[in-house]
Length: 246
Image (cartoon, rainbow, N blue to C red; front, side, top):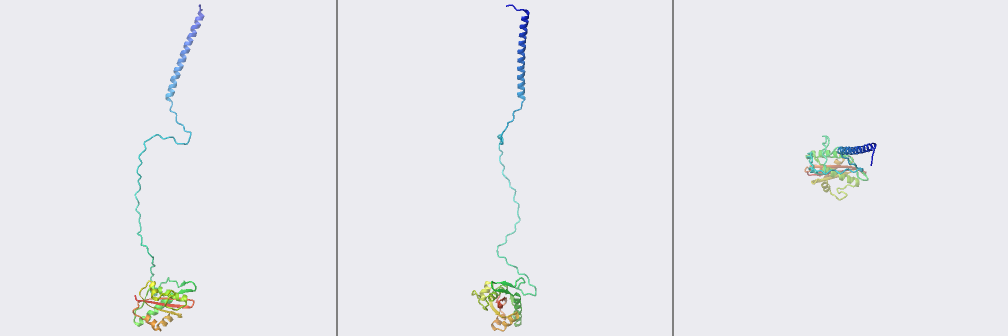
């Protein structure tokens, strides 16, 4: 088959162009592969993304051995030695020289024992002690020491008599003078004088001294202690002297 020069040139040109196109495609492919490889090598690893609120799992690490808890050394505390339990007792206040030992200024003269009202008269009781000791000194006996236990016993009995309105050595509960003294804590009771109808201490002591048995108690030199109680009730004053041997 016959071909012209133009046809041949055209075919050659076409072939040449095809070759160039193939080379261009190959070059582009190679270039793209190299470029993709470099981009792939240079790209950093993608970070993990968590869409919930939970904490990501922690990497497995060695768990440290728990250390033994150390406590601070105890701080020494100052302590006060405990006092033995017992009943608190009031310390007697010193009496002025013009007052009689055993009678205290804080003694309140008024005490209510139901109905009627009964009042203690401590000043009258002090005066009775003075007059009693004066009579003893004249007789040659020592002055009596005022004992708070005997005073407590005498006051209790004067209040009983003022409340009952009855002059008696026996208490409403049947107690004798010696039992009342022992109940007040005094175990060496000696004697008791009681009285009613007297309006002053001088009258009371004078009345006792005119009675043989009462006078014998006041002027007994073996007696060393005394307690006096005077109570003022609806029917007047009630007087008690309690005596002791120690």
